[in-house]
Length: 493
Ligand code: BES
Ligand code: MN
Ligand code: ZN
Image (cartoon, rainbow, N blue to C red; front, side, top):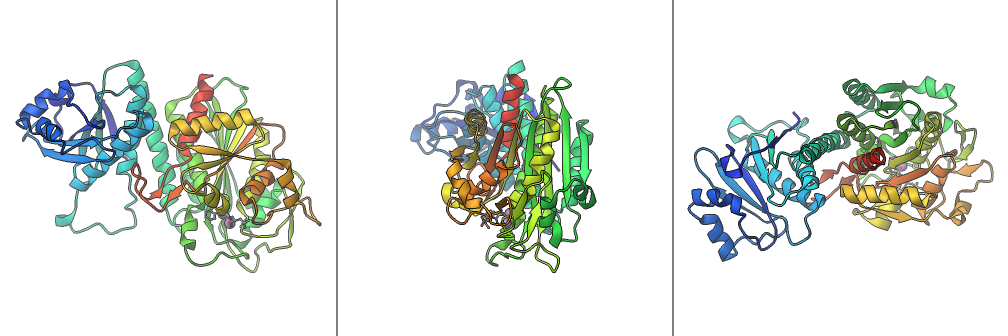
């Protein structure tokens, strides 16, 4: 059940809540508006601060027992010495949500005295992130051991148009991220290409978007030999799903978002080693990100046209599977020599990029868990950002920064192109180990015809094996935030 958020315009000490969360900076003073609460606990909070038992360090928490009625518990959460931003507010709210979940409380209220509109947005996103889970496939504990789940989050803030808009945006982004994270956590036998059809259908219906769904035979008619060769080894129906959101004027060129949706990537005939292969269920995170972003954009009712396109299949070895040395033809007529069947994401994206052309994009941005090389190059803290268009790349970098999904620009120099030249076809699908993320991006560029294009390699950032503080380990929701911020900025321009 999705968490429900509300904006509360009341004095924090007048709220009836099982848990009042007070987010404080490093070496905090107790906000004057909370004087009443300190009185309720006989000065315990100000005494604690005076003793410096609680110092407001990042992620630091302390719980106080409150009254029977009204404010029933008080949780101090430190946000550290770093400047207050949407991202630091997000982290503190997430820490609070995780504490509330541990306590088994169904409701909490967040209070950040110095919160502006952007921080309200961060609070909502953080509370959504911290309370997210995927319990579907686990047997719940016995009733007596069970803790309730966090269901309602109130954000205490001033009654202003700007705050209300930021709150609504936070909810939209949090719900978009929840969609992406759910898809990312679903095992490959639960999240299939048809799952993307279902989710796409729901989003389209909720927000009156156009919906296009293609299967194997439709794609064959369009000559999508590149996408389809990846799907050769699976009996599952491969799917191309396009969502068309028309919030802008008719005829306005849309922003096109494109996602790699490999529901599982075994590598195919060039099979991956067994250790950690189970991780490859996350190989649909780009597509999950597009779905999440489309949900958020629909909720936000942004005045702009946006198209979301995902290509989904499963990369499997079989007697029918594509094999190294085979040559396939993409829908723009270009031929590709398959060197490694594990470089499948770019093959799917190639035909999606050709398909995108029909929408006459103002810009296309794809997100894909494309290369292991980007994990080596940038680790888990930066999205690889590739574009031959510096201005477009900068715009995406700015969006990612704002969203708390920072990216880093990578080179797209022609010199690297030598590595994907083929003796028998127009190009090879891999260019060797050196600069593997760059040659992958240059491969994609071959299928872009006359529109600005930015490629996001999210292989290192879409899923985290470690707790990131603002989010427990697992799918991170990246690149939902980047997509949404980019589209929001374009809608404002
Ligand atoms: N989905 C993988 C990328 C990946 C690998 C993400 C490891 C996270 C961790 C992609 O389809 C892939 O297999 N890429 C190959 C390309 C190579 C064969 C040129 C890779 O990175 O090893
Ligand atoms: Mn692969
Ligand atoms: Zn893959």
